[in-house]
Image (tube, rainbow, N blue to C red):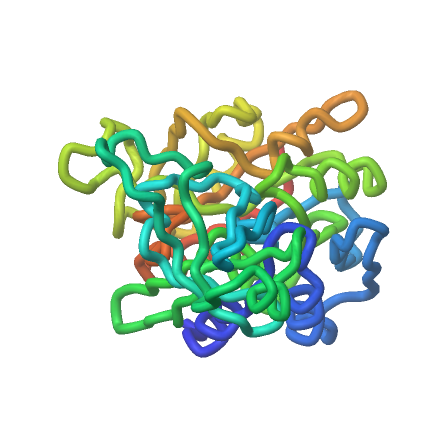
Length: 329
C-alpha cells in the first residue's frame, strides 16, 4: 500500500465548502491516468476515464466536518455552529485550526450536570482576552476543523480526516491499477457531502450515469458493547446493503459479491442504521440509478482519532478494480 499517499491526503484540511486544496491535490495524483476532467460550479472534481460500456459514476467526498463561528463574546470566546455531524461529548477539549492557521481548543460553559452539555453551551478558546483581540484573527462565518496529525503504522491509520479522504484514496489507487475498464467511468470527488450529499446530487444530474458506486467510511461495530451490526475490523471490504440514505440495488450488491469471490478479495456485508453516503443522492437522480457502496470499516467516526485497518483499505482497492473491470450481467 502507498501509505505515504494515504497519510498525505489525510493531512489536507478542507471542511464543507472549502475543498479546493483537496481537489488540487487529487488532480495532481490522477491526471496522467484520466482522459479529461472538469471542476463544476460547486467544486466537484469530475475525472473521466473513457470506456465503451455504460456510464458508471464513482463518488467519494472530499469535505470533512467542521465548526463555523457564529458569535464572539466580549471576553474573546468564540461560539459556533456545526458544519456536519458533531457530538458535544466527542469535541470537548479538542484542538481546532482555522484556514489562516489560528488554533484553539473547544471547551464548555460550567454546568451543574455534565449530561446536559450541548453545542450551544460550547465555545472555542484561541487564547484571546477581548472580543477585539479575537476579531483580529477570526470573524463570523470562519470555519475550523480538528487539528491532529495522521498516524500510520503497520496495521492502521488514525486521523481526524479519514472520513472521507480514505474513500478518495481508494478511488485514486483503483484508478491507477485499472487496465481494461468495463464501463465509461466518471470518478467524482465530491463536495459538501457532510451537509447533505449536495455535490453528489448536482454531479449525478450532469453526468446522468447508468450505475453509481460511492466510497465512504462505515461504523466498525466491534468495539465493546457496540450495536450488533455485521461489519468489523480486519474482515475485508464492506459491501453495503443499506443505510439511512439508500437501500443498495440488488444488482450492484450481487455484482460486488461476485467480483469479490472471483478476485478472492476478503469482503463482508454492511448495514448502517443511521447516516448516509453520496449514493443516497446518486440513486435518486432523474429516473433512478442502480447504486451501491464500498465502505471502509472505521472506528470513532467524526472524532479526532478516526481509525481504520490498512488491510481493509487494501481489500477495498482490490474489490473496486475487479468491479470496474467486470461487466454487470
